[in-house]
Amino acid sequence: MRPRASEVFFLTRNVNKFEEASAILGGFGINVLMMPEERLEIQSDDLCEISKFSSLRASRAHGVPLIAEDAGLFVDSLGGFPGPYSSYAFRTIGVRGLLKLLDGVSERGAEFRSAVSFCAPGADPLCFLGSVRGEISKEARGSNGFGFDPIFVPEGGGGRTFAEMTTEEKNKYSHRAKALEKFARWFKEEWAPPSKCR
Ligand code: IMP
Image (cartoon, rainbow, N blue to C red; front, side, top):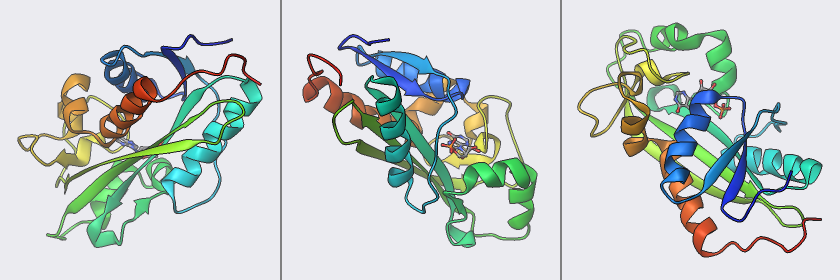
């Protein structure tokens, strides 16, 4: 299981994340291969620390270069909650629960953040950050995407939620697209695959 120089594994089971990454990285001539494994996560407030740990563990275990991502939704009026706990919040209170927490709250600013970490065998992980500002809508709208997409309205997106956009449109604004673009530029310009993975 050794990728070519223009290929990288993406440690994720999330088909939506994988499609978003394939479109972005494909634009840079990088082919993405899904590594559909459970991602080992540490408890931390720092998305980069979480994704670095996941990429390091998986890269060492499989002996291949790969990326892992950790993302979160930071709501201003909730002091940044759910942030690094977004996946737990999504599983427990979900979209409806988050809307309920903001019932009657006029300050609806929020930010999606993505930390994409790349790790190759024998090297330290590197983290690339991306973020997008927006607002939490009053109600869920749209059926595309995943997670909190139906209630996040990105700045400059014409008032539509991410779930009302195609993957291509979401990729013009999203936190993940920005982090992946940073990674892709670095990968194309700076990274040279080791002659032999340890
Ligand atoms: P993860 O740990 O990186 O999978 O992200 C944590 C949670 O944040 C996910 O379960 C989603 O609910 C939410 N999330 C992360 N990125 C996105 C996104 O692009 N759209 C909608 N929700 C997202």
